Image (cartoon, rainbow, N blue to C red; front, side, top):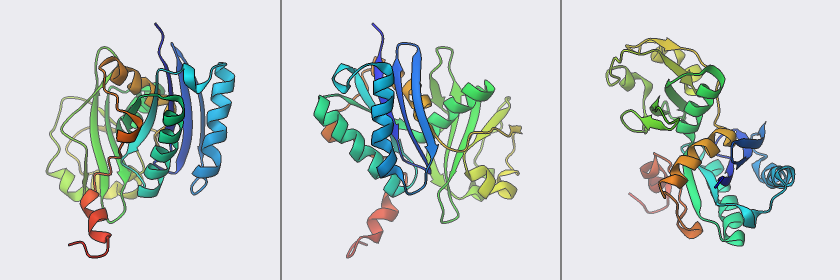
Length: 233
């Protein structure tokens, strides 16, 4: 049976929606900082109309779980939860970093990808991914938020060419150029829902779904957010 999965993402400056129907992907994507709340739902309506289905006919609803902008991640999850509640759909959280790895494969056929999103505060959200034979991705090490200079001594030298993805490579180009591995510049700067639905189908097959009320973000910097709250140490 063909999967029908809708994905929404507002975790970065990009705003995107994608509908997976079997092997077909219908998507909308726009660079739209600070306009996510006005653009995302019309995009949802457009892809569903083009696919000729309703929310109730979907198997699951995927969302960009982060890392990314705190506000952007919350907006995306809130909208996805509202849609999922209304149609009684299970939800799938997809890493924005892993989505960029898939995007780099889609554009460059890259099977080893280093992703870095500028996290401000002189840090990057970081992940390394290796494409598997079935098309899924394996994270090498773990996703983390880290100062770029600390990565230089932490990265293993692997016998592979690694493609880059994400805004962190531009923001910290001089430091990341010192990484002890062969790096090829990719063209993906932001995650897209068109790549999230690809990852979501593997998660769905593994049963990695949650009820709408349990959908949660992955900030990678939870302790910083906590400390900003009044009265928290």
